Length: 403
Image (cartoon, rainbow, N blue to C red; front, top):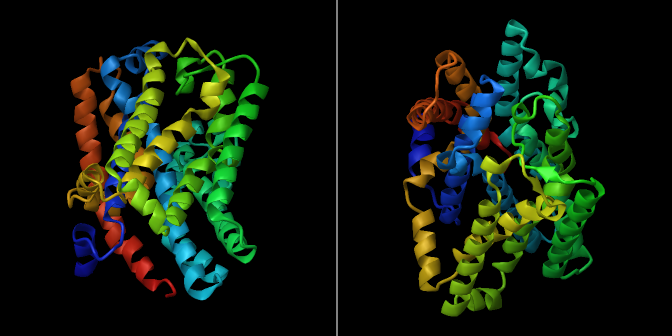
């Protein structure tokens, strides 16, 4: 057991230390987003509007982009794993892959489902939608309308699990039929953009940045219009995962590594990445949630952000000075424990935040200092519980997986 705790803080000989930094940033950002979002479950509408309209909280409200970073990382790591196996053996052991994924992800997920379900039974809180828990057990909860989902933050786990079912088939087919993998990934990404644009245009009218149904309690149509159509479906989010797989193919090409290691190439990538990320974040302002937004932007902005974030990950494989600096920053030991416990943290963070806010908030005025206080309290509890879950559940089960 001592070694399990030690593995949280001492990095092993993994190949991609820079991924730890990205994963840690993703979970911290997602956690910050849920802090503000869950306050709205307890506040009157007017207070919610005022809270989401604060300029100094916009960076927290953008934390839902942490999921896009998770998708890129998952696509890259799973892609690298599967590509490596095909290159070594000219085959894929599908059952071994699926068993390893299940042992890695399902037990802890089911434990949290059981805890939240029991809480719902005891409290009889209708917002928990415990009648829909069956969908979480088989990873299809993202097919249920957002406002009816049980543990709605786990829609991303369903998307990833669905992708895991398809990704091995895709990669094996690319090798078996001798398809150019770069072109195959590029076509899939292009199709993803095209599909989202078609869906966005087919919706008619315009979209709004309604991030919580409490902003529009008279009608949930505008909230559901975006979330059910474009937000939590595999077919509208898969491009971020495929971008990660594409990078797993590209880093195996010496010519690609030479090009991105040119100083001018690295600087250009950094400028484009920052431009895409900043451009998207600058356009999404929840202070203006009542202003209509164009369908094209709403249909594609997550993919533009994902493209910018993927370029940053590409840059970490560059030997140019800016690439080395970024790699060094993302590989700092500080990030590693946060990254190691990120799966546990993602599962339990809304539960912790909900319970803390439920016990602390009694209708009083909320200032920025209050938000930060709750942030630190919830962060410490979440990290402490995540350490225990990792040491007693995640790590022992990972060690039990078939080699």
